[in-house]
Length: 78
Ligand SMILES: [Zn+2]
Image (cartoon, rainbow, N blue to C red):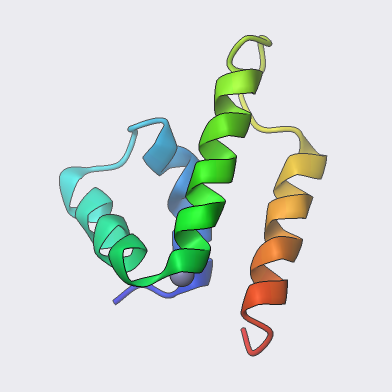
């Protein structure tokens, strides 16, 4: 079972559909049980959709930072 941090590290690849099926499934299993991560995925998806209109290979640093902070807030013990 992946934890939220591992999910977070794979999310941009997951959203860009660059993950292998097995990894994708693991994330989906986690998302089914973890509302916090579902919120992050939805937020990230919207953000990625926005940024796809800008020629850039990665998400801007401040977006990563914001999402990271969000996860730390929801999971203080991580
Ligand atoms: Zn989670």
